[in-house]
Image (cartoon, rainbow, N blue to C red; front, side):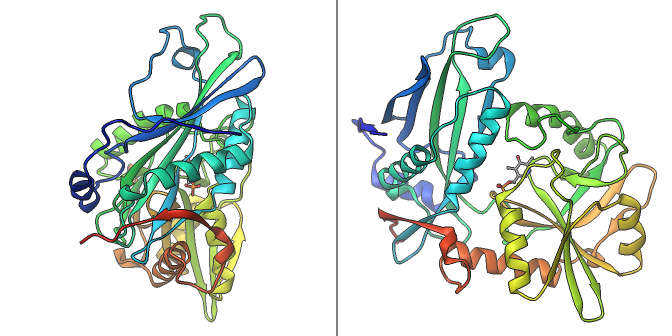
Length: 371
Ligand SMILES: *Cc1c(COP(=O)(O)O)cnc(C)c1O
């Protein structure tokens, strides 16, 4: 699709961009431009690169009322030598289609998704931080704009792709988190929306996050399956993995994708990467009772969460009301977690011999090193 270019008339001065790039926070600053495209009468029209600005929405825009809103999150990673690469953007493009289909929304062609991301990265190349672990975070979002209060799929949609410079999600390179298990709420059930990236999944998880944070001192919720509340699924925005060790065998285990778990691209990448580093991989049900017993006996040695934003976040302990914490690796960051993190970051930066095809180099974009 042809994308029309409308450049910002007074873009942010380079000195100000440098000040932001130096200390970007996580996705707090918007860059000067965004991609916008609309869908109506059965087709995509008017794909444009436009100055970043407020939207004008009819108050009846259906996304606001009925929640037809799906999104993605991916990173453009810049190096000191100027090379910029998107990490597996084809997977995000495909997943956005799957999410849209579940919500009876139109699919954005994969080629258009890639073109839009590339054009935005090229345009905003001055904004790309180069410090290790930092990136230009891209947020594609697709939502219903048709003004109508009736209940049915909308007939008009808007796609936006936003960009924001991002420091590493956690301050230090690997910072352990504590996750809490709750009995009173669940995240996703069979046939529901757990496997898609939709706005509502996040809204539905906040109350549990508040409780585990305020009452239990946890960083995130660890969700159990809705039907039996006995096996672990994932965190609110990250998948979860454990390391099992017995004699010479090191095994990375993670819940299988049963339709209630978001199929994370970081998860998929780690499952491909682990065997290359000599670890076995198994996707299976992982019961909370098993974790309690086998973390205690030293057979399950590490736990970590994984997702685009943080890449890997070691889980120090699982907390549950009226029970002792399940502690992994004595609370220290594990060796296997660290190796997987280091190798995946190296792949993303093009410093590894493995999986170079996961990097989608944006030819025209050059990141500037910070002086
Ligand atoms: C986005 C997301 C993930 C992680 O997916 P990545 O593709 O690795 O970023 C995991 N769980 C949920 C619920 C998510 O929304």
